[in-house]
Image (cartoon, rainbow, N blue to C red; front, side, top):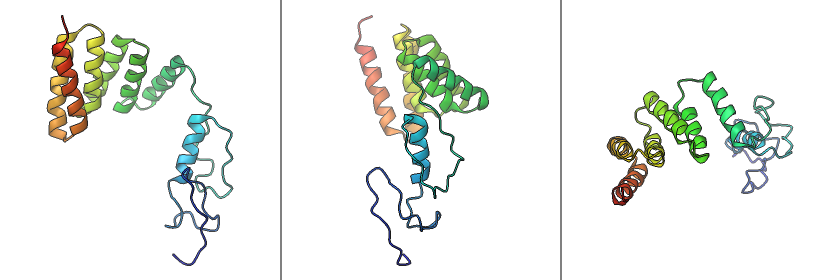
Length: 173
């Protein structure tokens, strides 16, 4: 690889030799991106390498600490990108953690409307419907999700939904 010396890369994807051009194969290309990402999420006071090709293009954000703040940030993100099913899915997950199942149901349903093949949203919608006491709807949604997962070859999510369906049927009314 051109005879350039490269320092060992640790498990944490530390910088390689700064003389290596950013686009070369010698550099772990995702490292500056993941470094910026970890800065934005963890809030640790890590220094960015002076030769980081990402520069200041990755904003450093303070960590989101409370569930309410996470929900606010997700809602802001959804306002910016209303057709992104991931935003609704993540909003549903946060609401489910807070046991706000009706809000979670709404968010998961929106994710599925945007992307009818979003198998994880079917799984989580089924869980939230069950937790909200809507067992028959949960069974219907999980059944639909299994069909979608089979069609999209999402074997893991399909297996999880089948397990949830089995447990749902075994639960006393």
